[in-house]
Image (cartoon, rainbow, N blue to C red; front, top):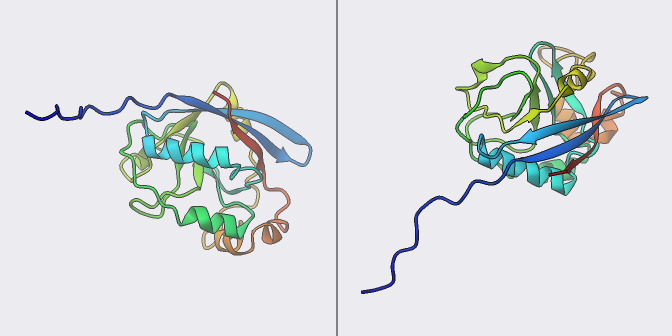
Length: 194
């Protein structure tokens, strides 16, 4: 008789962790915002988010898409080369295990198994997204949604629905284009804190 087969029980889940952002809401206002990340909700999404935060990717990222009564999106960094490196590293979808309620954070996606580095904060209950491949991996803590609600959205939705920031230009031109949109709120810094 040979050795016993290796155990096929799943590995223990990765523990919950927190991420602290410092948001630059406008030229004079910097505020902390803490997220509680839940790998048990979306293991692949939470792991990618942690990897992006720990690499410093989100430092300086602008909230380029803010749609009132829907969501605030961030994740196209101002360095086109760095963005393209992360945008080419797609991750598979996680099944939605919790709803896209107000205050949850979810990866944006362009279709099945296409999540990369853009995430959005649900500004309202967006449960209609639950069966469309949008699986939350984190939630805003405490009174943090009061901060999120102050993210600048005055430029509006991007083309063709509005005159807001053009994602294609951010991806291609980075900070050179973003300089023409000085009111955009951004993540000054992000770090894993627990």
